[in-house]
Amino acid sequence: MSSAPTVPPLADVTASDASLRRFLHGLPGVDAVGLEARAAMLGTRSVKTTAKAYAIDLAISMIDLTTLEGADTPGKVRSLCAKGLSPDPTDRTAPQVAAICVYPDMAATARAALACSGVRVASVATAFPAGRSALPVKLADTRDAVAAGADEVDMVIDRGAFLSGRYLQVYEEIRAVREACVRPEGSTAAPAHLKVIFENGELSTYDNIRRASWLAMLAGADFIKTSTGKVAVNATLPNTLLMLEAVRDYRAATGTQVGVKPAGGIRTSKDAIKYLVMVNETLGADWLSPEWFRFGASSLLNDLLMQRHKLSTGRYSGPDYVTVD
Amino acid sequence: MSDSAARLSVMKTYKLYVGGKFPRSESGRVYEVTGSKEKWLANAPLASRKDARDAVVAARKAFGGWSGATAYNRGQILYRIAEMLEGRRDQFAAEVAASEGLSRSKSAAQVDAAVDRWVWYAGWSDKVAQIAGGANPVAGPFFNLSSPEPTGVVAVLAPQESSFLGLVSVLAPVIVMGNTAVLVASEDRPLPALSLAEVLATSDLPGGVVNVLSGRTAEIAAPLAAHQDVNAIDLAGAGEALAKELEIAAADNLKRTLRPSSAPDWAADPGTGRLMPFLETKTVWHPMGM
Image (cartoon, rainbow over all chains, first blue to last red; front, side, top):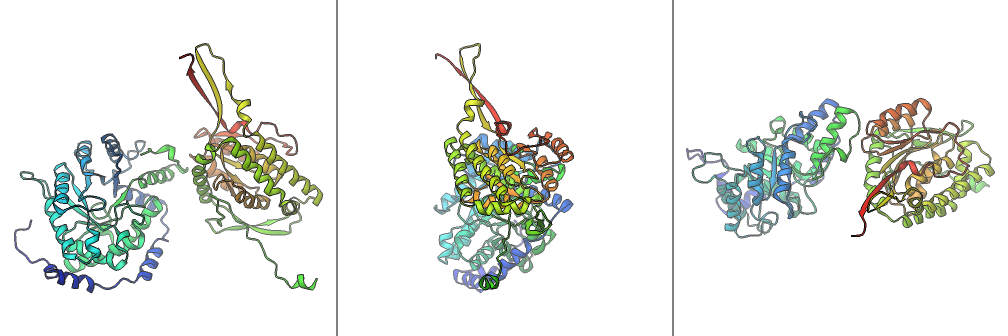
């Protein structure tokens, strides 16, 4: 993209498997007890009244409204798009969501439904959620999603390779997928944003999550994402905090800002607000926008809308007043 | 004698009953409960509107399973509650005596009547449909069948005076047909209600079917009456002014509302007056002779 052949910072660490391993294993170890205590402490903040209203609207605008089911149909995707465009039909002041996240074969449907609304189309790719396919298949999957109109691609890393210590293979795979995010010949649009999913639940240790974060950022991820939502352990406050810290340190080291997306298991407004507090305390206001922070969620939106009703009417709302999806 | 004097007294921490668990109030507050002669009895949790909200969520979650259980099964479980209570008569008689200032024999009679009331309502579980439903003759070739169904989550304000017999008399008819309940105990006499929760928890009654809150009736009832996910409210424990206020709030989402009667006699035969208000009639038209 940039024409000048500037040497990117930390370029030497990705020169070989050995140097990459040396770098990743040289990252400071994670203080698990301290991390969990800090995440728990940040979760105790009380956010009320106008601040809560602001947080709820911000959280809605950060949602990647997701449907990733085998039973998805074009009709379901279209209705989800309609919901993303106008989350609360009774209240026009409710903001739009950030993106609609679907499987690649539904990306064209979502693209058509969202048109030029500003809500982006995110598509998972690279044999989501397991990532167990040959590289050419993963790349074809990615190109297909981009050609169908995806603005953002959510890829999964090869956890098998990562856990076996083949870091360079993972690095090169992310690079290759990134190349595949470039628009087809003749298009003037910017390349699709790349979100790299680690599947924290399968990485077993906090140290691994820190290494995966750095690895993905070195490979040029635009966003790092906690999990697919398809395994037992998804986004948690501590592992998201760890990724936020990695993103902060990466910007300090290289000047490049990377976004973070916790996904899976965030169902209540209370949870979402805890994450926002954590972002603000760890990264500051620079990241407090849909540009740099997202929630991968489906049922969270309904809870946010019910809280919004409560704030505007003073009465507790109920599931009869939001859509069933 | 000297042995019992040396023993430390084990005080009971009364707690709320929400979703099958016994939490303290979210607010951390408690209030002093005194007996008939202003003697301190215990501290009871002073529930907040957030406890009420949590209770409604628990009750809504339990509704599908409880309303879907067979009438026979619900009857069995209510009967089981009576069995469990029977084994703890002395405890409840003592609590009622302390709360209401009754003699032991009178309070024991109240507890016996409450146990019998559970049995009586248990029997109604598979009989209400015959009274409230039926085959309707219509002017066309249709089978036309009406059947009563539970309305959903019911907020129940327990009577202020009759802390146990009155409580059972308003609670049992609500749940026997498959509704789930958020029960607000008598403000000054909440201890029998909080102890009843321990019986409910060990009687095969699924968690969340009955949720018991104690505290200021007006404070807890207001958010329940306005709550959009509550389907009905029984105002038995509300005074005249409060009942009017709550009825206005309840009208907002067309809750079914049962007004308090001026001089309730809880010992009398209850009839079906408390069963029917919390039912919806479903009518099915089916073509005949096809």
